[in-house]
Length: 250
Image 1 (tube, rainbow, N blue to C red):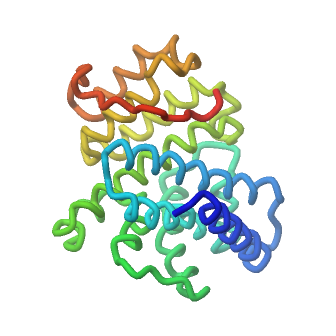
Image 2 (tube, rainbow, N blue to C red; image 1 turned 90 degrees about the vertical axis):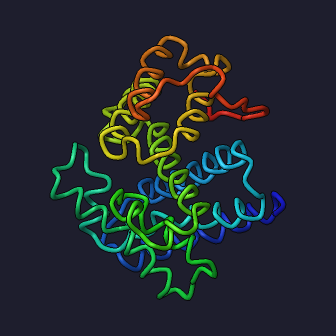
Image 3 (cartoon, rainbow, N blue to C red; image 1 turned 120 degrees about the vertical axis):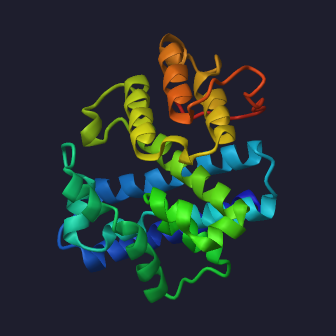
């Protein structure tokens, strides 16, 4: 898929986000809707970096990246979910359960818009990106490990994309490196060893790499968290070289 096609897809999906926001939300600031669109774009970009570093087939990556652009559209389902999404504080467990409904609502809303995925694996990615139990126990994913792996990549990409959005209220305006540390701790609490060690190794390459000066002063903390999450030591041999990776601006 060429860059021009990818741009057209992003433009089309961004317009869909804006249209559904007007249709379903009684009041929403334009900057909040645009922030959600930007988050999905960054998530898709991170997803591509990790999947390509793992050596996955380009056709599968392209199809999956398009689906990733739609993974959060369910946050526009109603005023309650969207208000909690942008709430300027940490959410309670009950509120988090409400927000996590957006995964299923994404699929429902897309179906209502006439958007259906040919491969069920794409639906599973969206459905389980906040559901560890569902990811582990779904029979379809047990028999199709490629889609299990792609779902894991989406989960990690979603977390890291959120970390780069330091303007998010619940990050209290932290600078990028502190925002990343907090986000990785949340990833550890929610997912632990459910995510494969190969993905954590690539994440370590992306974040700890000396080419990103924003993280030089916290590389020890980052490595400790990544090791703790994966319950394993990441040796230099386990870190997959990630050539020509363009990192987001620090």
